[in-house]
Length: 146
Image (cartoon, rainbow, N blue to C red; front, side, top):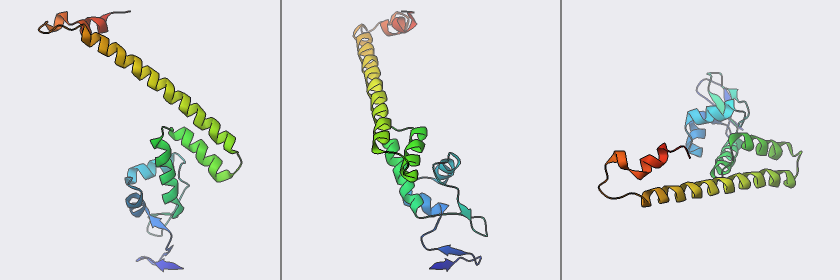
């Protein structure tokens, strides 16, 4: 059962305009449009007055995208995951393979961050109080080619 908008177009009660979708998902309108341009949200119909009309399942899709981003998936990876979810032409093994690759990337980033932390800590330990900036061991180490 639909409702009639002020311009006479029939909008299903489960359909939402972009402003309502933004409110429901905590995203701004520009982010929703960006997801649409990237193909993460399906193309939408427009009302007679030009408003984008989204299906209610767009809320769930955006929540899926946000959750996937929170665990580190890129938009490209999210697109792959959504494709597997929507098409049903895959297996859990395929999803697990994507997740395993993401986990490997995260572990590599953590190792890199730990190395940066140790290097910076070591540099800071070389500093002596009161040295002028031109004699600072941190600046010297950053200027060193090795």
